[in-house]
Image 1 (cartoon, rainbow, N blue to C red):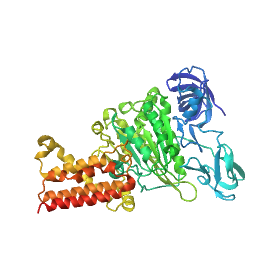
Image 2 (cartoon, rainbow, N blue to C red):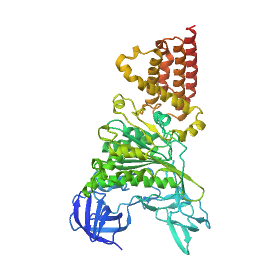
Image 3 (cartoon, rainbow, N blue to C red):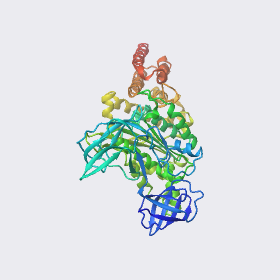
Image 4 (cartoon, one colour):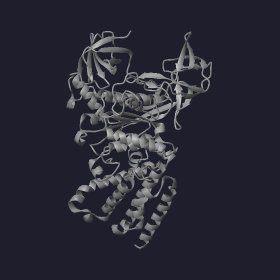
Amino acid sequence: MIVKGSVIRVAGPVVEANGMAQAVMHEMVEVGNNRLIGEIIRLEGERATIQVYQNTSGLKLDEPVLGTGSPLSVELAPGIVGNVFDGIQRPLEELKNLTGAFIKQTAGVTSLSRTKKWTFVPTAKVGTKLSGGDILGTVQETALFEHRILVPVNVKGKLVKIAPQGEYTITETIATVESDGSEIELPMLQKWPVREPRPHTRRLFATSPLITGQRVIDTFFPVAKGGSAAIPGPFGSGKTVTQQQLAKWSDANIIIYVGCGERGNEMVDVLDSFPKLIDPTTGHPLMERTVLVANTSNMPVSAREASIYTGITLAEYFRDMGYAVALMADSTSRWAEALREVSGRLEEMPAEEGFPSYLPSRLAEFYERTGVVEVLGSGKRVGSICAIGAVSPPGGDFSEPVTQHTKRFTRVFWALDAELAAARHYPSINWMASYSGYIQDLAGWWHKEVDKNWNSYREEAMRILQAEDDLKNIVKLVGPEALPDKQRLILETARIIRIAFLQQNALDPIDTYSTPQKQFKMLKIIVDYHRLADNVVGKGAPISKVTEMPITEEILRMKTSIPNDKIELIDDLEKRMYESFAILEATLR
């Protein structure tokens, strides 16, 4: 039954309608003559409160409100990857073609094309007993991505018919399943409510790192595939650049980048740069494994609130295929501001700093949809979602509610520092304020795949940086020249770690990405340098003799002079380093 009501109040994105007694919570509705998309968020008798996901300018009283009978959902089928959607999964390219650069109200626009044909290759056999999550066949959606067509979660039965290999639209039947005496026809297209997590068989422990190619992240503060991380930082500290670097170079199978309430020029930069970027492992454009959800600050505020759920639901769909997904949410502060604005228009009692009291639970709901899971279906496939959320605390105040609540639900905290950004140190992640809760979980992977001494070298480098931080106040008072040579050596080694390892140039073709193997070799040579220098300084060599050696400058330059495919040159550099220190030590006898 189609519920039909009428508009009785308009307050920005919040609309009230009468005659909605038969409607249900979170039902999607069409508001007004322009059929604006909205969602019911409160019901009181016949009165429904609706948050509208499009601009309500021009909406008048008594215009009709029609129920759809279904919750706000996303369409799941081939055609998602490489596409650019708004917060409620409308394709922006198609909207631009229909309405021009300034998007107007558009009715009847579908998220995915109903006319484009895809080459379906069946893999399931007739007569097989199927259940939700089983794979019916595949579609090579892009050169980088094989789209696995899944049996819907609520379908179970015997496969009685499957389409032969050929070209099909997403709405054509490609399989027929017999269940309880009736036949169910299955197209490639599915729909799923964005606020409902997709089910899985069981959760697993995260044991593999998300390799990003960013040394300060991978080596010092790693995040797991299936993990969660927060990037808080004040304006201009490099949150968006850092997230774009992660989106460009992380080794996830699928990247979903949600631009939630960010400035339009930042999303333009993403849309302009991503199609030109080449995947370092395959040589194909990165857009062939990327989905962009763009909901900029000038778009309707309610759609900003929905964009996070749209992104995580798409991520769960790809996870259920058995893929590792990385979701970048930039930024969750803008999402929280959207919650605050809608809450204010609903006249709800505000909590700290005006945010609604349910802010922590909404953040928890989002981050709890991450993880490594055994997905539904046969074959015990494993998929994962790693969520990385940027937080924009006003004035860089990490004690504000969004940052504090985000820390509760994430295990990695990459604290960006405005002073580092002002000094052109990028990524501007403060190594003293950041932490990772995955180090012990991921140490096994590093020890097996890279080197068994990874954690010991990492810990020694962190001790050097901590010692430098302890010496800062003394240096400010008396200057570095007044310190004994052993402490001056700590300052020198920490400087090398900062410049040669932690600092990374996103615009340098060699330095923009470092493999795990290169990262470890770089860290090892720096720590070994410190050990050798400490030895000769202890035997009486002045610190100036150490810092003046040509090998010191070579170590500082190795990040840009040695490519990832020639890391054996680091071994040569290490050999020359040992020879240089041997010569210096010989002069002391």
